[in-house]
Image (cartoon, rainbow, N blue to C red):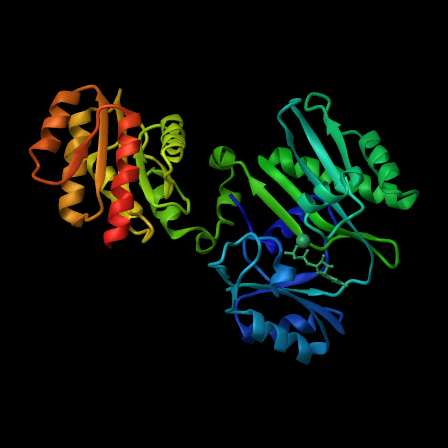
Length: 392
Ligand code: GDP
Ligand code: MN
């Protein structure tokens, strides 16, 4: 789960990481009151969406004086902000963060994540802050610094000392940096984060280290023990279909192809997408209906797949282990009837009660194409979707 910059900063602050002063607003009426509480005359108006690269997309503006700040807020609030991370559809800006403008001397990058390859935490830092870290890694790989922390011994001051040395800090800034790293570490562990990132961490003209942008990702599997983090969720920032899917316990991720996939089991869903690709098609989604799909769940899954206008065909690939093929077949039939599905459906069922399942499909009077093997099924749906795409 993602949260907004202002929420990430509040969390960082509660772990002793210094952040710039700022306030979140949701309407223009609130702005005057907020500007009065900041020192001025420099302000920064920042779109709050779950995406980086907002600056380049026009969602972060520096303003001199209150009038300019208000003007920038008018421009940004309500805009559809497109960044290199949002996709062409962009995101609606319904919240702003108004901060004091900071006199920046230098920008750094600092993050904490898990290095699974060595089973340790890793701090990643660079003197090339502000930029996208992926680009820095590509263009100036030598400027990326990594310091591992063993989870059994935990964070120690020497980690901070080592990082400060590598970033070129000394004296008081070493102490500040160590405090910031300790804060990131404690936040990461206590809140079950999967990423904590400050980009940029800045050194101000008067020598202070401050986080002026922040991002925290949480491990969804840890959210059950953090109701206070769940409260920070902003579903408006999530794909509406993915939100709907999660209500029905379906794992749905939208992709940009044309073949809708309805599969039980994440591994089988991945394999199904691979084999669709192998036959020259491209999947419109990843969808795992889980081990205990009911007719209702299958109907919901069809609805979600069909709400994507790019879908030109649906491949159903169900292996009945815990789940019974006849139950799934009933689900497919009732969903296609009630939704009036027009796109071709290829169904590959196997496992428990497969014969009854196939009979139900064949006897439904609907054009649901049965397939024996996954390979055959994938080949067929790619061909069917192609001809459906041409004739519609
Ligand atoms: P992002 O584009 O989504 O990563 O948004 P950021 O919050 O990182 O802002 C983008 C850039 O705006 C930063 O890298 C800074 O260069 C600049 N910026 C943000 N806040 C301030 C500020 O208070 N003072 C100055 N001088 N620049 C700022
Ligand atoms: Mn940033």
